[in-house]
Amino acid sequence: MGIDVDISIGPVDVIVIPPGSGPSKLASGPVMLAGWSILETTGAAGATAKITSGGNLVAVIGVGAGLSDTHFSGDGKIACPQDVTVTVITGTIEGVIYAVPV
Image (cartoon, rainbow, N blue to C red; front, side, top):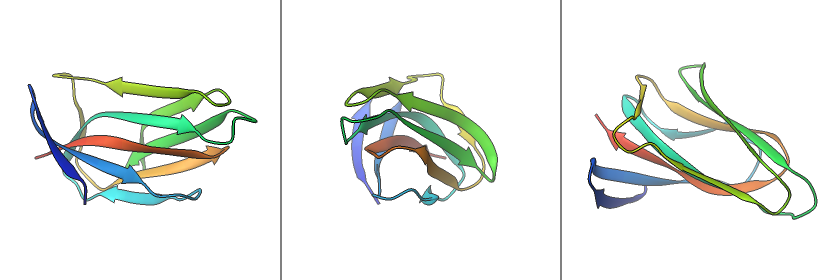
């Protein structure tokens, strides 16, 4: 499922994004999305992924070749009332999402 990290907003599940293009169901809702950390792994081209909840777009993440993007929203979490899914649109990534159980 993930590991728990205790920070100022409470316990946060760190959920690994599995390899592949997905879509990959990462969390069963409801959860509050607190952020993500994504790395483009080939170093050859950029990558784009999307996070959805119940089919609704929550975030689009783009990273350049060999680069990463880490976003942590702190107290401004995103409500995800249904399952949270990550789909790789282009490129190859590895990473995690940060989710707060509701």
